[in-house]
Image (cartoon, rainbow, N blue to C red):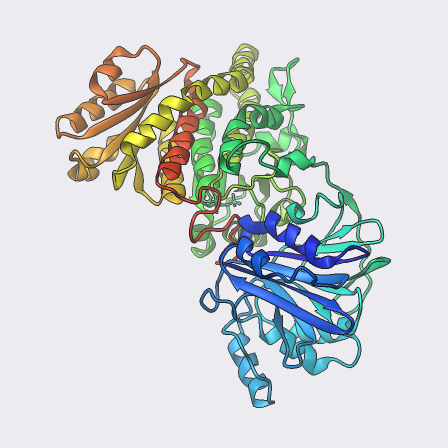
Length: 607
Ligand code: M6R
């Protein structure tokens, strides 16, 4: 949700914190702030707006070898300088940055106010420094440990005291935190992206753990002060993964990375000899997989669309009943866990609270839940009963693109694995694998349409409402196309099954509502073409993504985006890339902040 970084070590803290904030900006970007301590005094600088604004007012001579910083996605209290983090106690010697929500903050605040504490902000977070100060007797760690049990809700936090030099105290309960172990320096952060340019040695905190870091070392304990031995893990990311590398935006870079990210999702996972997939992380024997009678997928947003697509694919190819559901809905409807069902929690970030809590609810009821995630070491993969990393590399743009096609790729592999245990022959498996193997090159060819798509975006960007229409495997792609356009361009768009058009949405059709039709040459092509004609008959405008040379579609549509002919199952990959590009260029035409669209954040860790 929001982003946190703390630093202690020999280098000037302010510069490191500022750099970390820039790398965290996708986590929240309505306000930001930092605090450093020097000679027993804390200096707090914070400002509403983007991080660039904060950097403008940062005193160039801001000293201090330790400090904390935060970039905010507001939950409690409006977006303002005052409500930005860090928050401090009355004496201004304890500063805290916090991700999550303190649910009982009103009661705590009233009690603290009655004891004479003066609050400056409207945030839930501000109770934390006041509570810490009420317990403080020369030991920040001890005061933090007395404070944490009083907090109801979720937190990932870091705090510092003006007179405890080079000491960071961090804690986690429901909001990710990690320790970065450098050479004579330490970081505590909410995200790897904030620190990976400085160290690749990381310790992931679990809920209920507290870490104290100084440049010389660290120790981790639980709330009851029992030492917890933590493993230092190595992060394999290269710097390029978090740089734009010549692209104008991360979204553009990530769209163009897809041939490689799809390949990475497949690498080492294809068993050519047996024409099947190898997914060791599932932690399931073939016998257990054979006993699976149905598959259920939970996720949110784009990850849900990947899950929905997988539900079509699993049934078509592996003949295993499969359904996808929004995690936020499943969690609160007291789901029935079936013994023979296998569940998947799909999440790019691995931290989405709706998906995480739904997963925990399923596990409480005895379900086996596997994760399909991107962020290595994040909460969902750590708490799931097994799973598969999609290996997209960091996805920085708010709008998910490469993670979607990599999630799809992993589901294609899982489908292959299950299908080969059931109805798919060796020959069928071989053909499936060949089609998958061609995908990176085929997706690359779609990039040849970039200029054409840019021109279409220019032509259509003035329209206020769009419909995206597809069928079968391409229905979830239509939903995804509409979501992409909405989130980055703020243009209203809805995705529908093309068959549903006549059940209501057709009432919207006139020459002001462009319809984007996905028209692969599959079994339902003729029906989709009929739907296009119905739109044209009502003066609607049609943009069709269709197979190159499809004359009938070209005759009906106002504009087409041609894609190469591929195996029927592979069209979703070919269809979604033009839609991502269309959303990207429409956003650019409208002057939107593509990588940081309004009101959004990269991982939604609050309900
Ligand atoms: O990290 P997750 O995949 O769990 O995130 C789920 C959604 O919040 C996410 O896909 C969101 O819809 C993106 N902004 C889509 O581009």
